[in-house]
Length: 257
Image (tube, rainbow, N blue to C red):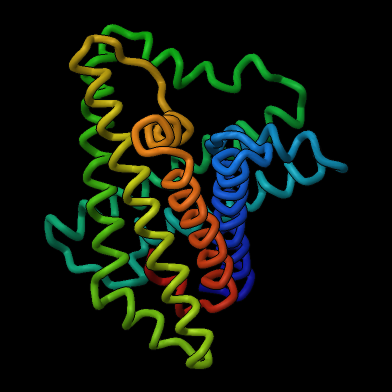
């Protein structure tokens, strides 16, 4: 990959980290009663829009997310990690492509907010869950999210993740911090994805399919387990955000997730 493309991809990885950092921070504040709110990716857009130079920041966010789209599609089509050509490898590369699509939608939502067009912000996804196939789609999305949750736990506790970090030029103490941030981050992502998948499946089987987001999973955690557990999980997402920003700086980390 050329230097310019690598920088663009790194900017994208860092931008994803920023998104998760804000989601985790706002939700943590809400969990412990210091303001904030149970957040999702769309909440991040609204939050940034309200800041000083919000539109400029949203343009940067949109460009950064496109950088992440580029990286995911680069992984999907050029296979820099040399994933083996098997069913498992194909599923992983398809997942990279879908991830790129989802972050592309988020980039589009950010740009639409800059242009002052709120009407189309959620219309595409909303239409999907208002169609005659909504129940089937909700169940399929739920199953996929549960699978993603399991994979996030695998990322957190497999030896591969540790080897990936230890193969970098990071100092030993820094590696230890990165491992901790990554482990709690992947664990929190696994919890949120798994619960969100459960909620989608539950909605599908109850013939009440609708669009759900991370904020719904956070609400479930708070209702079932209390604000303390919600705070712990959301702090894990802050850790994941920091981990992604570190990955953006060290390209050898950027080959993996």
